[in-house]
Structures are given as structure tokens and as C-alpha cells.
Image 1 (cartoon, helix red, strand yellow):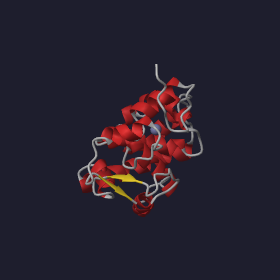
Image 2 (tube, helix red, strand yellow):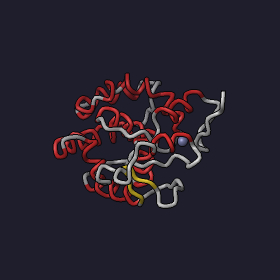
Image 3 (spheres, helix red, strand yellow):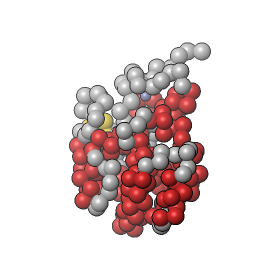
Image 4 (cartoon, protein in one colour):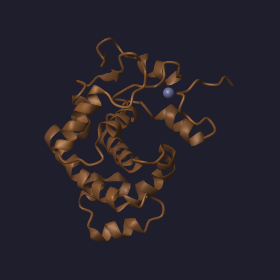
Length: 198
Ligand SMILES: [Zn+2]
């Protein structure tokens, strides 16, 4: 079988990582449930490797009510104590408390914009963002804008580096390597009007 060329950072010896890269990373997300689940994992990822989070994703989903944002926004001290006993997840009180306060902000964004996706995609006018020179980056103008707006609303773990990483994963930014097979797959249905470079 012909070897598919993937992004340089993919660990080819990990089927989990390959499947995530091939089927999810950079594929535009347009539904709030998937978007919020990804946003939650990005928060917990801070300081850790993504593969660690991928391995724990099912345990996270089980521990956090299937990433139900309304339930998470109402978590109380008892629930926090239970989560801190759950070896399947990242047991950080700071991150768990941030996840709860962030969930309240996501609910407010859904109220204001109709959906979390509407809010996020509004920053690119609904278009997929490419870097001007097709080189992957740590931050971008769109991650700077979203980060600034989220921080103003009180969102935690919402620095521009974290947000850029989230936007790459959510497909709002396409930063697959030019040589990666997913770059072409994602661009093949794009017209001049469906992406922008900044
Ligand atoms: Zn790729």
C-alpha cells in the first residue's frame, strides 16, 4: 500500500495519532458539540502532549457528561471532588475550575451568536484561513483576535497560542503541511471565496 504523506509532527507509529490526523485534525467543524468537546480538550492539554489527551478522550467524555456544556456549567464542589479522584482524566483543580467557568462563557456565546460555531467562524467571515506563506505558525491574526475577545469575556486558558492550536484542529485554519495529503483533500472543494490568507 502506498504510504500517505502526512504532516511532519504525526507519530507514524501511533495508529491513534494517525487516525486523528487523517480524519479529524484540520477538518472544519460546524457543529457545537464537536467544537465544544475540542475546546475542552485544548484547555486540559495546556502543558501536555496532544497524544496524552487523545488517549484520555473517552475517559474525559465519560467524566464530563459527554461534554455537555450545560451540565458542566452547573458543576458544584462535589462534582469537582469526584473529578479530582478520577484517574482517567487530568486531575488539575485549576483546569477543572477553568473548564466550569469557561462553560458558562460558551453558553453566553451560544445565546448571543446562536451557536459557539457561529461565534468562532464569524472571525473569518465563515472562511478557512491559510497562512500567507503556507507555513504552520504558533499564532495568527485570527487567533490574536479571538483570544483577545475571549479573554475580555473572562475565558481562561485562552491565550493566542492555545487558540491557534484549537483553530488548526477545528479546521478554521488549515495548516496541514503543503506536502500532506489532507491539505489537498481539504482544499479541493474550496473556491476563491471559501478561504482567505492572513
Ligand atoms: Zn496533515
